[in-house]
Image 1 (cartoon, one colour):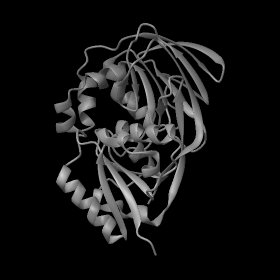
Image 2 (image 1 turned 90 degrees about the horizontal axis):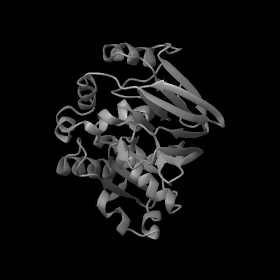
Image 3 (image 1 turned 90 degrees about the vertical axis):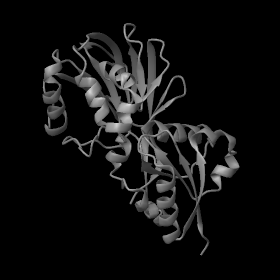
Image 4 (image 1 turned 60 degrees about the vertical axis):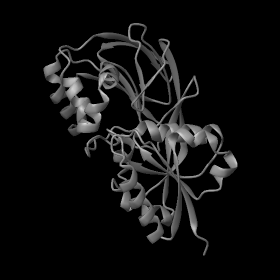
Length: 289
């Protein structure tokens, strides 16, 4: 039996990445499971040819949602179909949490069994992909404003501190279409999501990452004090409260000229005020335990 070869791509700036400890744990786990691993950083990804990348049995990503998106975007752009393995090392790790993949680096040996899931992704009109969510408004502004040392000290809780530290909720007029139907809703945040599990919490409502559908949500509550109740309603109620506008679809267009900040999978992204997104069903293969 041939030895399976894996490429590990690490983001050395990820809040949960510890270079020598993580590398040793991953290398040891793969060796024990009959695999071998080579290492690269996210910055060196573009130096590898498509032929080199396609020659691996799997590509392991050590980082947060933004790092996973960057690697996936590169592979999809070059039509490379090698499965991805996720070793969560970011601040929120929403995709890894939603897929319930192990959080410990020394558990990565499961990839050698070859079990996979092929999930949806969305592609914007600029060519960027979205695995987790696109966010506009208050949420995106506060995530962007969260300082790096907060993320390193508190992980995903650093975002919560930034959100709760804001004195008020802004109001934005969001104009958008969902599968061709037009809407105009005023609220503080709009997000279009495929995966929404955070901090180990999974929503009571079913979220299927393989159904070819994304969920658009506008949060319309007016008080910063109501945010904890808002989050509770979203995750623990079958039907979220009146403070949510929710629609499901495969194609979205959004206009928000008064809000310049766009977040794609946790990363700030240039935005001109209009964006279109199309869901690509079951387009990305990921290792599962």
